Image (tube, rainbow, N blue to C red; front, side):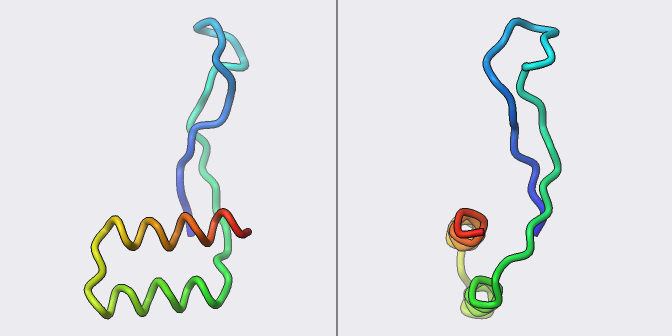
Amino acid sequence: METRPAFGYKAAGGSTDEARMRRVTIKLSAAHARRLFDAREQGASDQQMKEIVTDGIREE
């Protein structure tokens, strides 16, 4: 799974601590991947798919 979250701190503009988008790649567990594919086959909404991905990332 690949996502682009923002990492950083609230800081003055131009500071090196300013939040920036980062590319994060994570391997979902087999159980979460299965849930994701099953949900897609059952016609899950985008929101439902995002929730499954979020759960998988949180657990990793």
